[in-house]
Structures are given as C-alpha cells and as structure tokens.
Amino acid sequence: GPPEGEKQERFASILYFDVDDIKGAYQELKGKGARFRSEPHLVHKDGARELWLADFYDSEGNTMCLRRYA
Image (cartoon, rainbow, N blue to C red; front, side):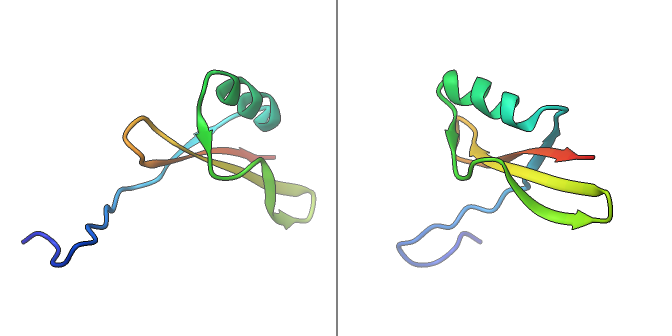
C-alpha cells in the first residue's frame, strides 16, 4: 500500500550518464536550466583511474548523475 503519514517519500533508481568531459557537460546542462545537487567532484581514485560525479534533477525531481570514469 501507499506510505503512511504526511511525508510521502519517492524512491527511484538513479540513472548515470557517462560523459567524456564532465565539467563541460555540467556547464552545458546548467546553462540549459538543469538544477544540480552537486558540482563535478572526485569521489574515488584507484591508482591512475578517477571517478567523478555531478548529481542533478530531471523534470520530475528524480536524481540523475553525470559520471566520468577514466
């Protein structure tokens, strides 16, 4: 059944979009009006490889994420 109480939480899968240039993709989407939760930031480094993420909302308030792993 539906959640009880006044606060109705929404649960959705996060979609990750792999990009070659996370800072460029961030600037482009932000320039088009996308609402970001975070700027591109390093979340993991393993030897020579790095994982960068930048979270944003889609038009329905779901979380999406730009991802750069190289």
